[in-house]
Image 1 (cartoon, one colour):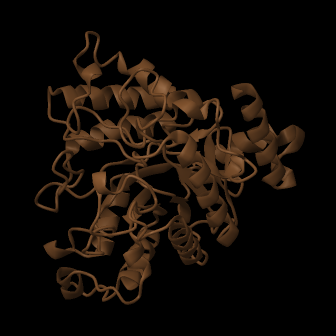
Image 2: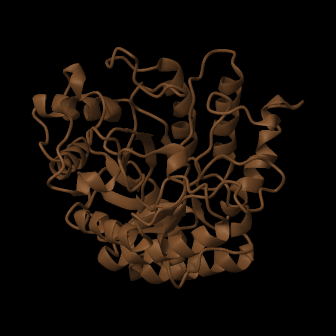
Length: 394
């Protein structure tokens, strides 16, 4: 199955490439294009994003998505957190770009697609908003002016609900249906139509209350909806957790489990292979103490677990870690985990070229941020860690 799917991806992607990029000289053209991977949205306005040989391309040019998550838009505040600290969006994004990052992932809720829902007072006081849609527009446009690519992540249908209360892209009580989710994905895709720096849409955050079988069918419909309204984009699909799903015998973090995707892959008639990015969320002991974190041989035992959960897909798909992180305290089990995961990504096809660390802002209880608690300085140890990924990818 892996070999057949890989062949399909190569054929599908070559069919989408301009003639000069394919054919007998295709390998030479790709090699030349790889020297241009540090291009930013300022330098090109791509007509298409697509996947080729586990890498992401903007038209003919491979791009690196060295990214951070910045939360806040998905909450009741409807604004990126930190605007209360006396700094502008442009100032924050300039700092992110200067630190060597090339992309930002923004979790959102449907509230920020609504031009009636107001943002938090502190965001309005800083001159932003006043509505969620205006705030979203201001944020993604500021990211682009800083030269950053953007991925929008659908976090959940209600900004008042998160985590364990949002296990699927619909509400159990019927107050929010699959059709509502599909409509919101369409709105997200339409929002991105005139914004060439938006690379893709992540369909749903950490679907942990449904099986891979159910999520696969929903993701196919969601991806088809995104591409119907904006065929330029990529579709990011997360894994599941443990509900009625094979875990290969290892506990799975929400969004990390693609075990069954090998034998029941996403239907490429719904989401073409050259438009699909698998995007696991995976964490270490700072977030939850899995039994295997206590085993002899930790953290080297993690390589087999990551392979079982999602790494087995990396040779035939683009696999982009949409979230990973922790406090990275010196000498801690979590620091050992993060060091091992960075080494792992550097050894798997394409994974060092696309990733989004959780998170930029420091107000995450179990991970902290790349930004210090003073909302000014950057965590030098985390920058050094992520620098290993950037160096390996170049």
